[in-house]
Length: 50
Image 1 (cartoon, rainbow, N blue to C red):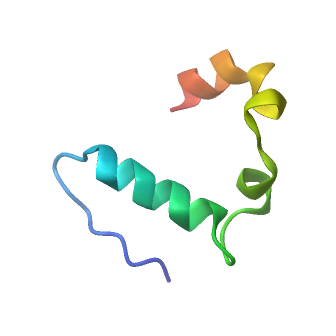
Image 2: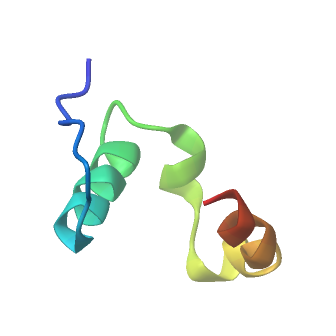
Image 3: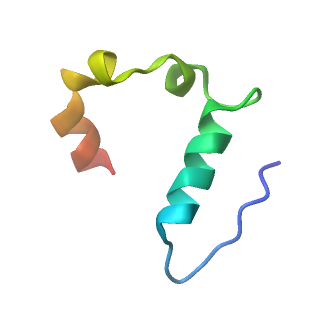
C-alpha cells in the first residue's frame, strides 16, 4: 500500500513524491517507460486528464 496522505491542498513536493511512487520499483510500468519524447505526441490529452 502507498503511504500518501490525503490533504486539502497539495504542493510541488507532493507531485515529486507521486512521480517517485509511480516510477519506483513497485510503481506503474507505463510511467517508468515514459520519456519527454515518448509522451510529446499525447501531451495535450495527458494534461486534460490531469
